[in-house]
Image 1 (cartoon, rainbow, N blue to C red):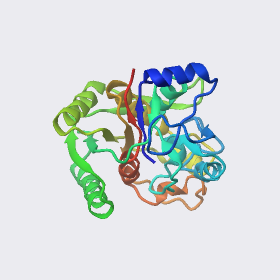
Image 2 (cartoon, one colour; image 1 turned 60 degrees about the vertical axis):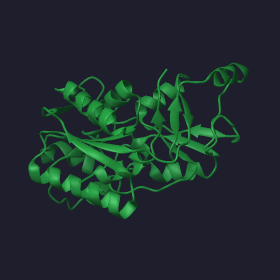
Image 3 (tube, rainbow, N blue to C red; image 1 turned 180 degrees about the vertical axis):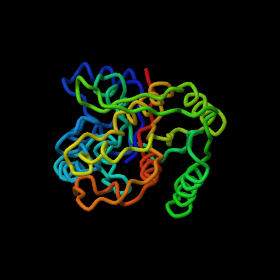
Image 4 (cartoon, one colour; image 1 turned 180 degrees about the horizontal axis):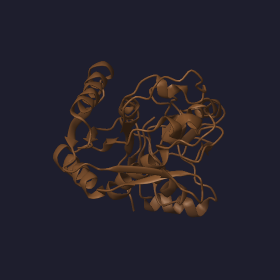
Length: 287
């Protein structure tokens, strides 16, 4: 379900002072607080979590939890299973940076109907791979009726870098040209009035040895950490939802694939789920 995220209003601030734990409704009426029980489900990204550290393997847990709460608030690492997902009407899908601000009491959530989605494509993506992503966007518009308004190519390749932190063992990374991403998003927001962003960055193709453990259900997702870095950058700067999909060459077939990571094999253009979720992610406004 979609939600809007904004600075607490004076009423909301009074409400926060009157009760020890703020609640939020999954209904479409803002600040009614009709629901009695709200739960937040978080699975940290890129740390090799036993449940949720792979390709949407926390989704069954989220589905179960959603049946015993009035409103479930969670994030992409829980609900994204590459090309697979499961819609839940009482669940709010919130990008990680926005979820942090909500947990701090700085932003509030309000359900919304739909977002206008803009696409940012990394200039480092090869022409044929770029075309395939645009064809997925066309499919999402034609078959799902999603409001994908416009796409833009960054003026400079983002140059995504990823690695495992030797001290913590978690995946992380950076983009060498974050200003190029910021300029592209700003152009979309100003020109087309989009209020949700799908970013596709060209990721380095993995050596088989680097991903063998992950595909066997024992390692860390090498992509997850820097994907979070990218989406956090956009949400922090523009206070609108952002989801990221990596553009990569497909890996060779594995004969010993863990079910926990098998969703990655359904398709090699992960952007489709971002369109589905981007159209219904929280709309974010900062303080």
